[in-house]
Length: 217
Image (tube, rainbow, N blue to C red; front, side):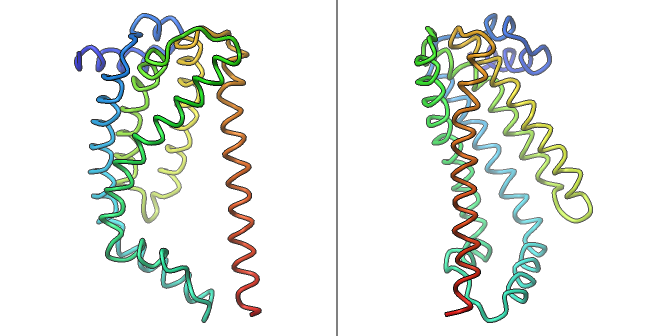
């Protein structure tokens, strides 16, 4: 079955289309989770290696950030994450957050898909998304290994390109897994992304307010 999923990943990555997803689609949530978990393990190892390689540069960036803020104290979790415990945190976050957010994302997409008239099964949708999300996560981990110094801009562009490609594959997979037309599938994936963007803007506003207000106290 694992070889079957590898063949499915190769097909949807190299020949992306709704027909390709439907050709390799299975209603198998269990193997979708196994595939995502294996990808998360590899991505966690790559993230840990990348963190070790980038450790000195990150420490220097932290010192420069502290110098710019002057005497203003940083949140306790910030220094802990960027310091010695960051390596362990990177492994744990990479491993468990991938599986957690896979459940959250596929669950939201499935419920929205049903609300828009989709008829597919949750296992089919999860399987379709796992076919490309697991390998793309590994590829992103490989790219992050060289994401420091003068190569930051290049790896940033590659990361953005991978995100665009992942968005496109998600659109195709929702059409296949939920049996939805393209316009409805687009609404299904844009709505949660818009909500996340609004939440990120709110979080950024809170952080900016914290930086602005604390020095005046």
